[in-house]
Amino acid sequence: MPGRHLASISLRHFRSHRRVDAEFDGRPVAIFGANGAGKTNLIEAISMLSPGRGLRRATSEELIRRPENFGWKVTAEIAGHSLETTAEPGGARQVRIDSKLGPQIALAKVARILWLIPAMDRLWIEGADGRRRFLDRAVLSLDPSHGEAVLTYEKAMRERNRLLKDMVRDAHWYTALERTMADAGRRITAGRQATLDALMAAQAGAETVFPAADLSLTHADQPSEDLAEALAASRPRDLAAGRSLVGPHRSDLQAVWKAKGVDAKDCSTGEQKALLISLILANGRALAAQMGEAPILLLDEVAAHLDADRRAALYDEICGLGAQAFMTGTGPELFAELGPRAQHFEVVEAEMQSEVRHAG
Amino acid sequence: MSEETGDIQVLIDLMARLPGLGPRSARRAVLQLIKKRGQLLIPLADAMQTVGATARECLNCGNIGTTDICKICENDKRANGQICVVEDVADLWAMERSGVFHGRYHVLGGTLSALDAIGPEELRIPRLIDRMTAENVSEVILAMSATIDGQTTAHYIADQLPNLKVTSLAQGVPVGGELDYLDDGTITAALNARRAL
Ligand SMILES: Nc1ncnc2c1ncn2[C@@H]1O[C@H](COP(=O)(O)OP(=O)(O)OP(=O)(O)O)[C@@H](O)[C@H]1O
Ligand SMILES: [Mg+2]
Ligand SMILES: [Zn+2]
Image (cartoon, rainbow over the protein chains, first blue to last red):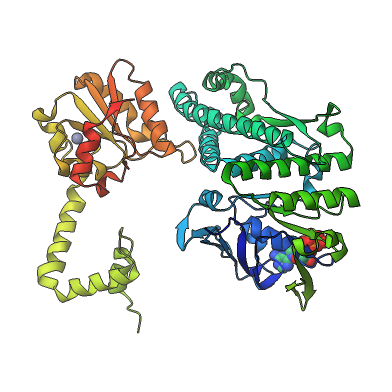
C-alpha cells in the first residue's frame, strides 16, 4: 500500500507560482529561499489539499496568480489517490478525488494535514477563535467526521441567528433548530475532548524536549449542562444580542505549561512557540498510533525561532515520527542538521514567477 | 452554424430552461417539434394552453390538479386517518405511482429556512394543523429529506402534534424531492419501515 505521504504536487497559476511540478519520497522536505521567493505559497498550496481555506485562510480569489487572473489549480497524489482542487475567477473552490467531484470535507479522509505558521505565534494571547480553529483541525485529523458535525452545527446556528435577528418568536422553530445544534454540538464537544485526551496521552508517552501541556476545554457560561436546555434558556438573552451566546462555537482551548503550572498566555514568546510545536508533534504521534502513519506537517519558518539545540531536537523528533514535514526557512544552513534525512528544495524568484529547484 | 433568431429562438430558450434540458437538447427538441408539426407541435401547444388555464394547487393539500380540491382530497376512501407530508408535488406523485399509500397528502412546497425567508406560513403548516381535526387524522407520516432543513421542518411539525402518532419514513432513504427517483419497491419498504419520530 502506498504511504500516506504527498508523492507529488503540481501548481498552476497559484499565487506567485506559474507552473510547478515536484515529487517527494516521504522524507521530510526542507524548503529554503529568499524572502518573497514563494516558499509559504508552496506549502499553502499543500494546505489546500485539506478542507477549508488553507493555512492563510485566504479566499479562492486571493490565490489566483496576478496579473493573469486565470484561476488556479493544485493537483496531487496521496496514498494512491489523485486529488485536484481548482477555482476559476469568481467561482467557488472545487474538489475532485480520483476525478470525482466531491465536497471539501471528503479531503479530510484522504489527507491528514496539520500546520504551524508564524501568525500562530500569537495564538495563546489572541482571541478564542484562533485556538478553536487550531483545536478543530487536530480533531479533524483524528476524526474526519468532525467536519460534518461542525458544518451541521454552523448551518443550524445560522438559521437560529437569523430567527433571533428577525425577532421571530415561534418557540417550535427554535426548538427544532436547537435540537440539531444540541445533537451536533454534543458530537463536537466529545470530539474535542477526546482529541485533548489523545494529545495529552501522546505528550506523556513521548521522549521529547518540548514541554507537555495540561489541556482543557472551557465553555462560555452555560445555564445548563444539557445543550438543548441551555439554548432554550438562553433565548431571551440571545434575542437581545441577535446571536447565539452558548454552545461549542464559544468554547476555548486552555493550555498550561505542565511542569511550571503557568498558563500558556503568560509564557515567554519562545515558550509559547515550544508549546505549539509540542502540540503538533503530539498530534502527529497520536495519529501515528491511531492510523499507523504520521500526518503531513507544514511548518512555516519553524526553524527561525528555535535555538540550535531545539532545532536539532525538532528534526530528530520529526524523523523519529516518520512524518513528512514540509519546513521553510530563508537559508540552507537552517536545515544542515537534517542532511540526507530530508529532501531539500530551493525556491527562487525569477522573471516574475517562483521556481522550485531540487537541491539534494 | 448560424444562430437561429426570432420566434424559434425564443422557443428554444424557453425549452432550455426545463429541468433535464440544456441548450443543445432544447434545439433538438424544437427541431423535432417543427418537423412533426401535426403530430406533436400543435397537440402540445393545445395541451399547454389547456393546462395553463386549468392547473392549480389544491386548496386543501397543495397537490397540483385542475380543480380547486384535488381528486385525492375529494375521494372519501382516501380519508383513512393517515396524512403523508411531503416537500414537493413530485414526491406525492411518486408515492401515488407506487400505489402503497392509501391516505391523503399534505404538500409543503419546500422546507423551513429562516435564511431563505421560508416560514411556516409559506409551507401551509397552519393549514396542516387545522386538517388534524377537520379530517379526523390519526397518523401523520413525515417524508422529509435528510437535510438539516428537512429535519428541522419534520421536528417543527412533530412538535406541534403532541397527541398524535407521528412517524417518519425509514432513515437512510433519500426522500423529499427525491422520492421521484426511487423505485416502487424502495418506497414501499420505506413506508413499511416507518417509525415514530
Ligand atoms: N495572487 C498572487 N499572485 C501573484 N503573486 C502573489 C500572489 N499572492 C502573493 N504573491 C507574491 O508571492 C510572493 C512570495 O510569497 P511567499 O509568502 O510565498 O514568500 P516566502 O518565500 O514565504 O517569503 P518569506 O521568507 O518572506 O516568508 C510575494 O512576493 C507575493 O507578492
Ligand atoms: Mg514565508
Ligand atoms: Zn388535495
